[in-house]
Length: 100
Image (cartoon, rainbow, N blue to C red; front, side, top):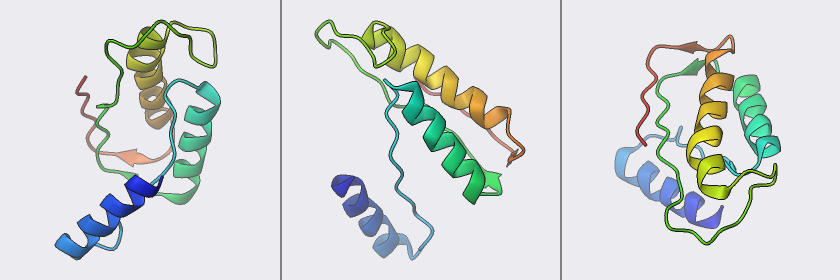
């Protein structure tokens, strides 16, 4: 979270936009995904854009918190889960972009 906060501060300083937020999300854990989505949906009215750009590659064999192979769990199930939770909400989203 510290690296994210540092980057957010740099973006705020560069752009003058104070509404740059950092939130914790672990795509290898559906509990984390649900907590992220619920927190976001409780605090925000609009989801302007969602870019699913996180992923793993060439990682040693391991499993997600839910028992799926890490690559499949993070790159596919995690991204799909966060997108579906955002789309099924009452948040007014005008654009959803997926970049994997």
